Image (cartoon, rainbow, N blue to C red; front, side, top):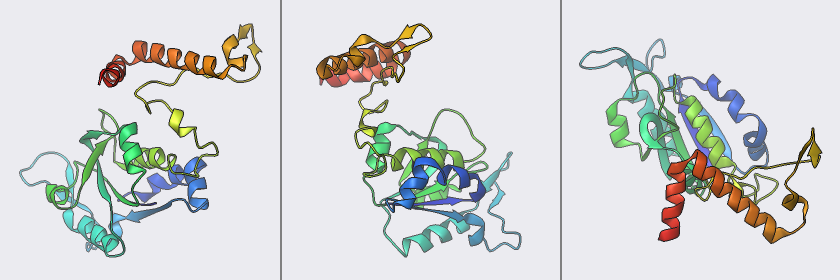
Length: 232
């Protein structure tokens, strides 16, 4: 897989993309992640990538030409399966969208900034608009890092245990059950006996019961979706 990220602030992505699982996935050659400085595509003397909004109002708008030049240059080298724009008014990014994106070969992520990008860029180039939550960040770089991390960890060969990602929270519209590690007794608190019983079916049954219990209490919206799937 290849992920190209377009941003006016590339330094914001240095640490998230060069540590932990995302770094290891690049070292293994499983994914290529390239960050492109949008200012390199500006024809302005001062490398500007924004301008005033038509109609007035507070805030600046990302100019269309540098973005178009960057996407055009990338598209000349390869075909992209998705061109994503990170924006608060996009569809909420979730595990199912991460799963779908993990099956793609080449992805562009355009990081929003200021008051957003010129609408003509959205109309001409963008195939998917995503938000990581109902709040506003200073820019889309952190959202791009979140999307990248969520997608990369699903790629075959990234995690040491291939089944780990399949048991993550949200994979089946349930929250993950409680987890425990050694020692079995810690400060007077003991691990549930079933988890050290060696009884595989009983352990799986316990985990499912706890996942459903936790989801019902903490995320009734997910619980409703889970029940709807069971009824379908």
